[in-house]
Amino acid sequence: MRGADKKEADKKGMSKSKSAILMLAVSMGSLVVSPKVSAHPHGWIDLSVRVITDDNGVVSGLHQTWRMDPFYSLVVFEELQRVENASIEQGLDQLGKDIRDNLAEQHYLTEVSINGELQALGEVSEYTAMERDGRLTFMFILPLETPQPLAGALLSYQVFDPTYYIEVVHEEEGGQPREEALILHGEPACELDILPADPDPEVVMRAAMLDKDESGEPGLGRYFTETGQVDCR
Image (cartoon, rainbow, N blue to C red; front, side):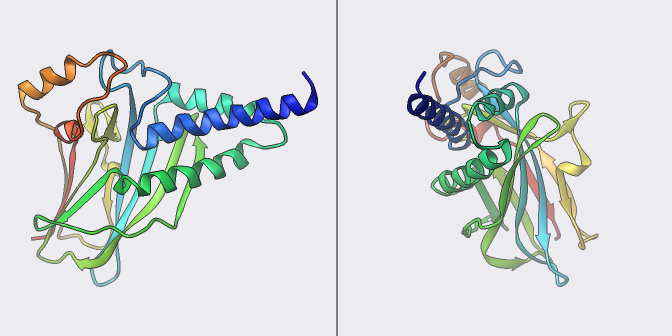
């Protein structure tokens, strides 16, 4: 292969890798089927959240860590290794920016409510993509547009792919969410909890009937998502 042609092929390889992770991030699809599930979803993200507060107990945002499933992560890293004249770190830096930009168009797949009132979200400016223990990991701080006091309040959040092509679950161990999956510092009076999804059997049946290369209707993923709660009432 001629030098110019090889460079073009390498660029296409990087583009393919970007497209794959971007589709994962914005719930438009995935190149691989996760071994964790046999139907839907086609891949998964392990989630952990740290609720960010100041010394006065005012919440300003959620620090989220997303760990992509191992098989999918392997595909992405292999693609990045094929790119000439660029390290994996450089490729991850660009992927992180692209993920952030595309998630912004999807409200970062996150909904946050305080006392039942949906909160407006700000723009993500702090983020990073990295390799950690063989997993593609994306970390970012999602700010609230207007910080809110937690005293006497119930904060709840959900992180989900509307089409349920990608499953988002809190980090777990032994079938239960890990203690580190939801963290709040400085508010000892608050109770933290992660509520499991409880979809209607009819909704479960609709999801099970989807073909292996199909996405669900918009909103389907909401029925299968966990809810994180910080109860300071």
